[in-house]
Structure formats: C-alpha cells, structure tokens
Image (tube, rainbow, N blue to C red; front, side):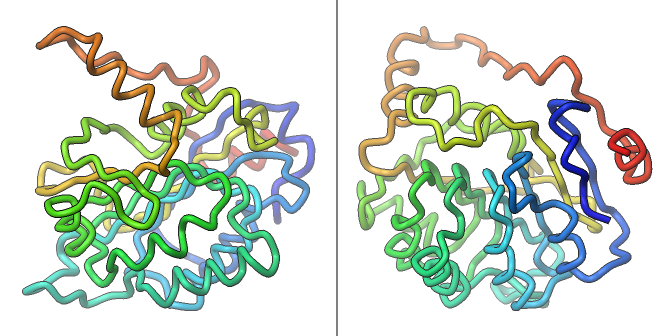
Length: 260
C-alpha cells in the first residue's frame, strides 16, 4: 500500500529504517515514491542487498531529493566487493532516463560511500541532473583520489578538505538552506526519510578514511560554506542542524496508521 495523498496534512517529517528486508526493492520504491510530488523522499540504501536493475529503477522515484548509496565495510575484501555496488554504467543509465523522462529532476544531494567501481567519468553524467548541488564521496577509490590532483572535474569543484558531516538528511537541509533562492518546487513538501540498511552500518562510522565533496560549478552552497569558514574563528564549535519539531522515528505500521 502506497502512502495516501493526505501525507502533507498529517506530518512534515517521518523517518523509517528497514533492518530486515521482507520485500523486493521495487516494492519499497512503490512505497516511497509519489508521482504527484506530494512529499519529498530522502533515501539511504545498502546496495549489497539489491540487484543492478533495482539500482537502475531508483530513477523512477520522481520525488527523490537526496540519495545515499553506502556499502558496508564487510562486503569489501582486497579492494573487491562481494555484493552489488554502483557502477559507471548504472549512472549512465540514470543519465539516459534523466534525458528521456526527466528522472532525478529534484535530486539535490548524492552521497557515495565505499563505491569503488566508480570513476570520475560519472560527473559527465551527473552534471545533467538539473538540481544536483553536491556529491559527497567517502572511500570511493578513484573519486577520492581525484581530489589530490584536480580542483575541478567536468564542471564540478573539488573540495578535498570538506568539513561536511552528519546524516543524509542533515546534508540535504544544509543545501536547501543555501539554495533557498533556487527552489525545485518540492522544497515545501513533507519529508519521508527512508533507510534500507539491514547491516546496520552508518555513513559516519569511524572506519571512514577519505572524504571529498564535489560541488556544481557556480554552486551557492559552495560559496556559502567558503564564506562561513572564513568568518568562523579557529576552534569555533560547529552548529548542529535543527530537526523539525515534529521529528520522530516510528515503525512502518505506525506510519501507515498515522496516515490512514
């Protein structure tokens, strides 16, 4: 059962985490997407429990505003993954669907963690995503290495010293705050923060070693953060992003009950 249209009137924010996968990924995509753009979806996914077609099908989530693809450390051995990960081919497929059907029209933030099959070629495809402002890469092989030799990659500014941290939702909030004068048309809709992570790993795990942030050239987010860093005195504590007053994490049945 998909979320009813009255979601907007019930709550401005809901969070749900799937720790035991009981359906195929396409069934979860049906639950989180809204073709009428009645809410925004923030999606975090461990790709090792998905199939390649499942990852391609993420493009069908029209109301997707932030996406995190994070493989658990235990799926990697000597630089090779034992599960499905993102590839250049998948992101090229996303680009083709963006060009043909307007997929990812509202995607603002893309977070990639331990996606070592990707190369900097993906930025040729991602620059066609009209609303995408930042790509945050952690332990992603060629992507994190690129920051050591280039200051710009295919129209993206490279920040190897990024101080970005926090959850995917935190990253998204910081972007829409900086880009308030450039709304996507979804920025006032309610938010569904949905995580499929049966391995129970977190992106901000201390096992992370290398992180780099790529900003779209001309990004107001990049300009805002550079100005904030210059104004902030050394040792100044980082302010935490405030969550909505109605934030709460509830079960799947409870969520559907609230919306019925």
